[in-house]
Amino acid sequence: MILGRVFNCQSISFDFASTDKRDVIQELAQKLVVSQPSLNYDKVLDALLQRESKLSTGIGRGVAIPHALCEGVEGVHGVIGISRQGIDFQSLDNEPVHIVFMLVSGVKDCDFHLQVIKRLASLLQNPDFLKKILSATNSQDACNCILEFERMVIQ
Image: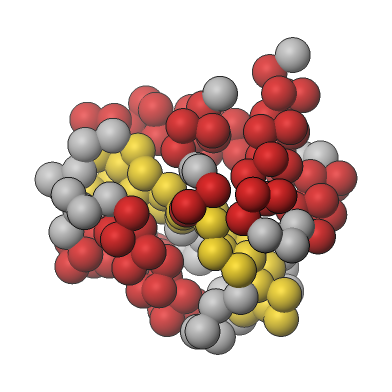
């Protein structure tokens, strides 16, 4: 279970204090560093913002996947943010983002980083996945949703 290794119940947040893209990235980067104390917040944030400056990771249909390869990071780490109100993420479809999957990976972990993005893309093809994760009322429900739909993808 690729996504089950990267995202866990403690890595899922509901309803951001922030309402714009930069602040949401900062807020989720902070959550990531709290859950992974070996990470350097400034380096993680800088890598994410540099990647985001090239092209918005708001991919459409209410989803954003800010991600970056970062020096000094080992492995692939992720957090998820779910916003009921939506965030202006300058998405490709100009619609608000309601779910953010953030990934930060070590430079040597590029292959696994791409596998995670590919697996996320597979889940996001299923409209039932988005409906179910957005209807989750707590992080355990959201985590269970990810695991349930990932099982379907790998069968």
